[in-house]
Length: 373
Image (tube, rainbow, N blue to C red; front, side, top):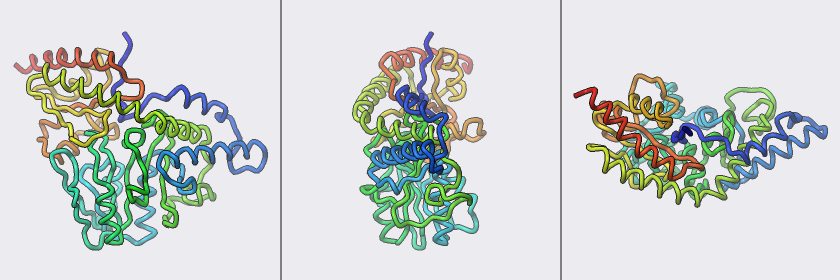
């Protein structure tokens, strides 16, 4: 039986067209070398920079390549704090661990103000930026619930306070029409493997004129902000994936919206007591639900035996003893958070995938609930 993969917010399958674009550069020259092989590699990296910039509505020279979103977030946050001597930072309670833990590690040297969220995991549209805050970090789309945050509105108030704004845009790319100028952000992180590109590569938008301090020192790669020989093949793959995410976004989103709506309707009808964690403003591929009487981990394992892959929360938190901090921040109890799963579709998800899940999930839950009778 064909396996069904519905955990795209953790990672997406590598697009065959992206793989084909990467193959010529798996054994290529160093992009810093002046010979023909090096020039070919440099040209490929420059082309990828243009493709990523186009996806974000940025200038190519504002794009830095990294090893992924975690490094992009770290460079943005630590680089800005160090370069500007920032002593107070504002973020939301539902940020990704790569943001929250990075900022928490700076305490008590840096005062971290954590903004609460409502029952849809969203900060207030009129969120106040505290006096003295030099940096605001707010994700555009949440990885667990799909919640879209009011980044542009918060960024406008941050600018009034003289603060700079970082946005973790990992889950938004390819699912929302991202334009960093319209958002008003100074820094924007993204990752290749969330948009059907390769793992181990990401990018950071750094607004022209903004100064960062590098995390480590070495060569003058990426304008001196990210030393190390470029992974040309991965960067090419990121560029190709970015171009596809831009050109195919509208069609993908329309299909995701239709499939998640149909799935939710079936599950609500077939699973008594189901509690949707579905915000009004969300990315269309993501569906988070709480199933009373069935622990999320057990549901995941049961579906895995059925040949279907889903998740219980952030992939970066797998194996953690604590249930989702996102669901708890939006008002769910610890027990409810432990009884939740996340379903996230990718570019190739189709009606038959959703139909199999809709048929299998009630059967798995019925077995689990019977164990507790």
